[in-house]
Amino acid sequence: AGCTRHSLGADQAEIVAVPLGRSGSPKRLVRGYAAHYVKSGHLVYAQYGSLMAVPFDPVTLELLGDPVLMVTNVAMDSLYSRVQFDVSANGTLVYAAGGDLGVGRIAVTSRDGQAQPLELPARIYGVFDLSPGGNRLAIHVSDITDFIWIYDLSSHEGARLTRPALNCGWPLWS
Image (cartoon, rainbow, N blue to C red; front, top):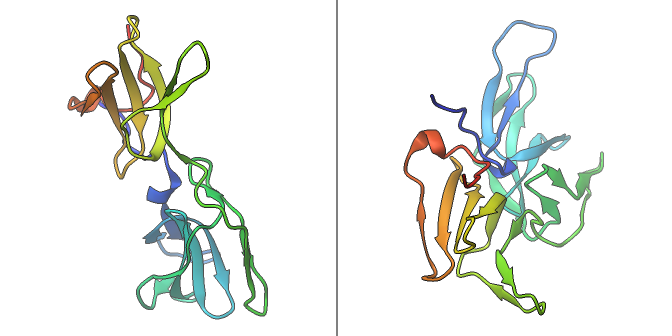
Protein backbone atom coordinates (compact mmCIF):
# COMPACT_ATOMS: atom_id res chain seq x y z
CA ALA A 1 0.00 0.00 0.00
CA GLY A 2 1.22 3.47 -0.79
CA CYS A 3 0.43 6.87 0.64
CA THR A 4 -0.37 10.33 -0.59
CA ARG A 5 2.87 12.30 -0.79
CA HIS A 6 2.59 15.94 0.25
CA SER A 7 4.88 18.27 2.11
CA LEU A 8 4.23 19.17 5.72
CA GLY A 9 5.46 22.72 5.07
CA ALA A 10 3.49 25.21 2.98
CA ASP A 11 6.65 26.30 1.10
CA GLN A 12 6.01 23.35 -1.22
CA ALA A 13 2.31 24.12 -1.70
CA GLU A 14 1.08 25.09 -5.16
CA ILE A 15 -0.52 28.47 -5.76
CA VAL A 16 -3.31 27.83 -8.26
CA ALA A 17 -5.48 30.25 -10.26
CA VAL A 18 -9.07 29.06 -10.54
CA PRO A 19 -11.30 30.63 -13.23
CA LEU A 20 -14.54 31.89 -11.70
CA GLY A 21 -17.80 32.11 -13.62
CA ARG A 22 -16.38 30.69 -16.84
CA SER A 23 -15.09 27.43 -18.16
CA GLY A 24 -11.49 26.47 -17.85
CA SER A 25 -9.19 24.44 -15.72
CA PRO A 26 -7.27 25.61 -12.68
CA LYS A 27 -3.72 26.74 -13.53
CA ARG A 28 -0.72 25.95 -11.35
CA LEU A 29 1.35 29.10 -10.99
CA VAL A 30 4.20 28.84 -8.46
CA ARG A 31 5.17 27.06 -5.25
CA GLY A 32 4.45 29.04 -2.08
CA TYR A 33 1.45 30.18 -0.02
CA ALA A 34 -0.64 33.14 1.17
CA ALA A 35 -0.84 34.72 -2.31
CA HIS A 36 -2.29 38.24 -2.62
CA TYR A 37 -3.06 39.91 -5.94
CA VAL A 38 -2.05 43.59 -5.89
CA LYS A 39 -3.12 46.43 -8.21
CA SER A 40 0.36 46.73 -9.69
CA GLY A 41 -0.41 43.47 -11.50
CA HIS A 42 1.57 41.16 -9.24
CA LEU A 43 1.01 38.17 -7.04
CA VAL A 44 2.80 38.57 -3.72
CA TYR A 45 3.31 35.33 -1.81
CA ALA A 46 5.37 33.69 0.91
CA GLN A 47 8.10 31.10 0.54
CA TYR A 48 11.05 30.08 2.74
CA GLY A 49 10.79 33.05 5.14
CA SER A 50 10.61 35.62 2.33
CA LEU A 51 8.02 37.48 0.29
CA MET A 52 8.15 36.97 -3.44
CA ALA A 53 6.38 38.85 -6.27
CA VAL A 54 5.62 37.76 -9.83
CA PRO A 55 3.84 39.69 -12.62
CA PHE A 56 0.37 38.19 -13.14
CA ASP A 57 -2.51 38.78 -15.56
CA PRO A 58 -5.83 38.25 -13.71
CA VAL A 59 -7.76 37.92 -16.98
CA THR A 60 -5.69 35.19 -18.63
CA LEU A 61 -4.53 33.79 -15.27
CA GLU A 62 -0.97 33.67 -16.64
CA LEU A 63 2.35 34.61 -15.07
CA LEU A 64 4.05 37.37 -17.07
CA GLY A 65 7.59 36.95 -15.81
CA ASP A 66 9.78 35.30 -13.23
CA PRO A 67 9.33 35.61 -9.46
CA VAL A 68 11.57 38.12 -7.70
CA LEU A 69 12.54 38.41 -4.04
CA MET A 70 10.83 41.35 -2.32
CA VAL A 71 11.92 41.05 1.31
CA THR A 72 13.49 38.44 3.58
CA ASN A 73 13.03 37.60 7.27
CA VAL A 74 9.24 38.00 7.27
CA ALA A 75 7.36 36.64 10.30
CA MET A 76 5.56 33.54 9.07
CA ASP A 77 4.79 29.98 9.99
CA SER A 78 5.06 27.70 6.98
CA LEU A 79 3.82 24.78 9.06
CA TYR A 80 0.40 26.47 9.41
CA SER A 81 0.47 28.68 6.26
CA ARG A 82 0.41 31.96 8.21
CA VAL A 83 2.25 35.12 7.12
CA GLN A 84 2.39 38.55 8.76
CA PHE A 85 2.05 40.89 5.76
CA ASP A 86 -0.43 42.91 3.74
CA VAL A 87 -0.40 45.25 0.75
CA SER A 88 -2.63 48.34 0.61
CA ALA A 89 -4.57 49.53 -2.46
CA ASN A 90 -1.84 52.12 -3.14
CA GLY A 91 0.88 49.44 -3.03
CA THR A 92 2.27 50.01 0.47
CA LEU A 93 3.67 46.78 1.86
CA VAL A 94 3.67 46.19 5.61
CA TYR A 95 5.11 43.13 7.33
CA ALA A 96 6.39 41.92 10.66
CA ALA A 97 10.04 40.88 10.71
CA GLY A 98 10.94 37.59 12.29
CA GLY A 99 11.51 34.69 9.89
CA ASP A 100 9.76 31.34 9.64
CA LEU A 101 8.54 30.11 13.03
CA GLY A 102 7.95 26.65 11.54
CA VAL A 103 11.71 26.15 11.17
CA GLY A 104 13.36 24.79 14.28
CA ARG A 105 16.11 22.65 15.74
CA ILE A 106 15.82 19.45 17.74
CA ALA A 107 17.39 19.28 21.20
CA VAL A 108 17.64 16.70 23.96
CA THR A 109 17.08 17.92 27.51
CA SER A 110 18.57 16.21 30.53
CA ARG A 111 16.65 15.73 33.80
CA ASP A 112 18.41 18.79 35.24
CA GLY A 113 17.14 20.98 32.36
CA GLN A 114 20.32 21.22 30.28
CA ALA A 115 19.41 21.35 26.58
CA GLN A 116 21.81 19.88 24.03
CA PRO A 117 20.95 20.62 20.36
CA LEU A 118 21.28 17.63 18.05
CA GLU A 119 23.55 17.87 15.03
CA LEU A 120 20.56 18.22 12.70
CA PRO A 121 20.01 21.28 10.52
CA ALA A 122 17.26 23.80 11.22
CA ARG A 123 14.25 22.52 9.24
CA ILE A 124 10.50 22.15 9.46
CA TYR A 125 10.12 19.10 11.68
CA GLY A 126 6.82 17.41 12.28
CA VAL A 127 5.87 14.53 14.53
CA PHE A 128 8.70 12.58 16.16
CA ASP A 129 9.00 9.55 18.40
CA LEU A 130 11.80 8.16 20.59
CA SER A 131 12.53 4.45 20.34
CA PRO A 132 11.52 2.35 23.39
CA GLY A 133 15.17 2.25 24.51
CA GLY A 134 15.51 6.03 24.10
CA ASN A 135 18.55 5.75 21.83
CA ARG A 136 17.00 6.54 18.43
CA LEU A 137 14.67 9.23 17.16
CA ALA A 138 12.26 8.88 14.23
CA ILE A 139 11.25 12.30 12.93
CA HIS A 140 9.07 13.63 10.11
CA VAL A 141 11.06 16.13 7.99
CA SER A 142 9.45 18.61 5.59
CA ASP A 143 10.89 18.75 2.09
CA ILE A 144 9.62 18.81 -1.50
CA THR A 145 8.53 15.28 -0.67
CA ASP A 146 8.58 14.76 3.09
CA PHE A 147 10.51 11.90 4.63
CA ILE A 148 11.28 10.17 7.90
CA TRP A 149 14.76 10.58 9.39
CA ILE A 150 16.10 8.00 11.87
CA TYR A 151 18.69 9.59 14.16
CA ASP A 152 20.92 7.60 16.54
CA LEU A 153 21.41 9.66 19.71
CA SER A 154 24.56 7.71 20.69
CA SER A 155 26.51 7.86 17.43
CA HIS A 156 25.02 11.22 16.33
CA GLU A 157 24.37 9.77 12.88
CA GLY A 158 21.17 9.54 10.92
CA ALA A 159 19.70 8.13 7.78
CA ARG A 160 16.65 8.79 5.66
CA LEU A 161 14.12 5.97 5.61
CA THR A 162 14.19 4.59 2.09
CA ARG A 163 11.00 2.51 1.98
CA PRO A 164 8.43 4.85 0.36
CA ALA A 165 5.43 3.19 2.01
CA LEU A 166 6.98 3.97 5.41
CA ASN A 167 8.03 7.50 4.52
CA CYS A 168 4.63 9.17 4.89
CA GLY A 169 5.03 10.97 8.20
CA TRP A 170 3.69 10.28 11.66
CA PRO A 171 6.54 7.98 12.74
CA LEU A 172 5.85 5.62 15.62
CA TRP A 173 8.09 2.90 17.09
CA SER A 174 6.39 -0.43 17.67
